[in-house]
Image (cartoon, rainbow, N blue to C red; front, top):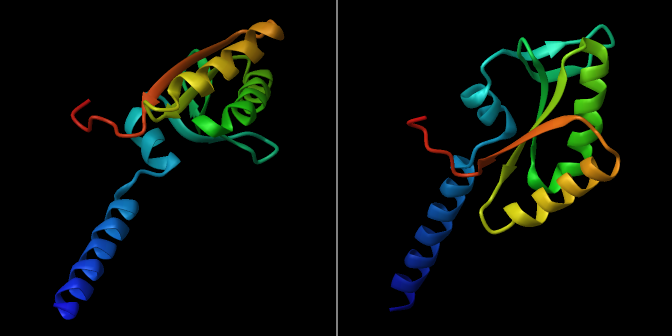
Length: 125
């Protein structure tokens, strides 16, 4: 009985580890969703996640919303394209991070387009 419990616990740990490894990294979202040039390199060697004809876009997870503002504004200033943020969010925390992001953008009167994508994307898209 003890051996069966140990095996079950080991299997659960392996399943949890493989699920964690299956989660997407930021680059996976960029590769999946970007409809422009990925990792566009500026003269100062900084990289824009996604550069389109109209936007310089920063992709970031929800908890990095403040960092995304600064990066998107900088990329916009260097390219002359509109700043954009793609916020990667979990449904449970989406409203919290989106509220903070939009409050900061509105308070500073910034011109940044924002969209959200789920942390569990539909790979059929």
